[in-house]
Length: 243
Image (cartoon, rainbow, N blue to C red; front, top):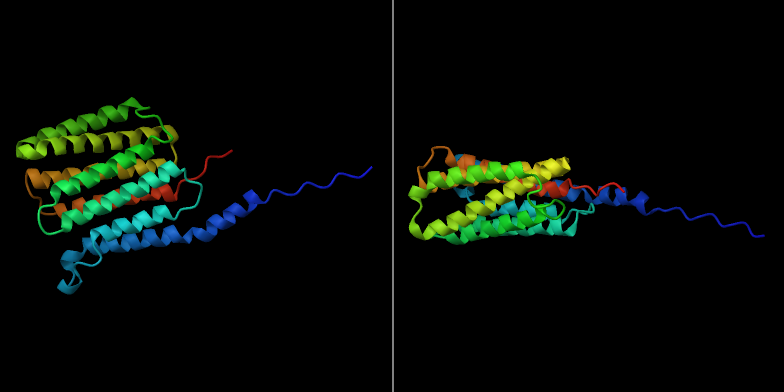
């Protein structure tokens, strides 16, 4: 009787960490470049004039986009590419806000698309409004924000501003609901990033429709970069569920 042949060892799982480790430097490098770029943008006021426009806000967002796009750690395709698409829409929005002329409405539309992409990502592994409290809190905040801004919003802009507020509030609420359900670092980072996005846009809207703030630019950009960084890092730090 022929003795049974020994089973071949399963090396697929054994080699995966090595592959992940080999590719792990790419998102880290790109996030580092994004941080340097963001610090440059925030320091533009203090730089000599020939250096003030480079790199710009869209470049920072594109670094974060690339960091999320090159991740190879088993991130669900819907989550990864929805975030990447949202960052791409945000980069278009960044560009529209620094172009000469009035590109506010196209920029608003680009960021609206970004929030819908993020909302789609956050519902891939977590039921929409699975936790009710975050939706109550963010709805209340959205109502208060609109009440504050409304007197200064011109008639043609009221519908776009209303739709935008609904979208960003729903996105932030779903991110919080997902973080409460999953309770992992990536989901929490995404929720913090979503909340900071609301903070950034709220200050930006207050400056545009109500009253300029002396340090408003630094608050807007600082919270914006942190927001997009948190959302992008939620892809970088995402780990495949244990089997």
